[in-house]
Image (cartoon, rainbow, N blue to C red; front, side, top):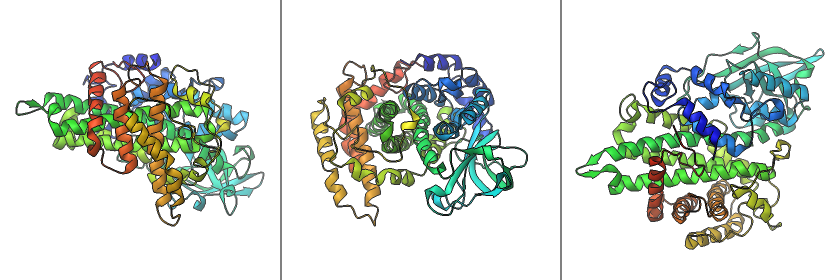
Length: 542
């Protein structure tokens, strides 16, 4: 149980209370006015919420990623903007932890401890995810350097005191880019705030530099290692972004269940009508599966950070896509009321949730770029190296097992050896037919890989299939390792999540396998009635 999440939720009060400044109505009002959640973020900062990714040795409140995931998700269910409002510095801070000096790490930590932020500036409008084409450049000048160029869509670009910025110092390849930790003073041109569909009120800005002086001690690490550090840091960001997706999904499903329970078609409650019931069963299965996948990944980064270049990307894909599916299903049930701006269930809340979830889906990278980032690693993952250590597998999936400390230095650009989740035998579990299907699908992946034409989309498509199968295997491991858990130990939970994940892996509509998914709706209704988060972590809500 995450008592910190429960305490935080109690302090923030009932989110359905229209008079609560930390409730849903207040979030929708801020969204309509494009306002930053100042008061909400201030309360969170008093509880050190904004330091839940900073190590204790630097004055942070980080304990473990599974703890932070649940804490952030619980807050984000009220308003996703608490994440960018308090946590947009996670990328810059992680990069500095990876290769910055002791003085630079303390400098970043001091800014964060006093409630400030450090921006991450890498992308450029003309090049998007093609980072090797970026043109912002550092050139020698006196005892230091000069910076010229524009960085695009920098989160909290107007509020940040400093920036971790990646710029070109060479001509070709990944080693042509270096990083600096730069004060953002009045000489920096901070362009107008860039409006976005989701996360309204959060300032994204373009930062322009024209021969901006950069002192020699601003260089982070060595010349040429910026992209490596940034790519490693993105693995952490992808993991934590799943908390935002899950927070949006939790509220969307809760809102739709309430509406469907109170609405009737003739004498039959909408919730008991066949089509809405099936749609909500699929939505429930999608959320229960996404919850399990994110939880497993949040534990996995402690045990096997070397493989997180694949694991984190797979988890990000599955959670984001499952939540998008949930939004579609809930929107179908809400029908016209899902598109009303200020009326209907939640007074426009569902529209905000849709837009916020859509932005989280792509805020750290595009869906295709995410898949491409690990598609090339599939041959190594599916090779004939030794099976994973069973003790490591048990540590990840047994929720009562103590996790080892997190070591960011062990993050790697490429996973080495077989995947910890799918590379060994699956444990004995309930729902043997589905587990047999999963095992056969995993066993067939090397043959599918051998038949892929690298000139078309085959490798990316196989990476997506692998992500869904990886997620399904994680659920089997969680079930087997937690037989006494009130949710994960249930056979109907496993049947529902596997039914959903295997359908997505096969590229078929989940409604075609809706039978095993129907218990997911019953589980969701049980959790909702008990005022619990839709999660294997038993968080009781305000």
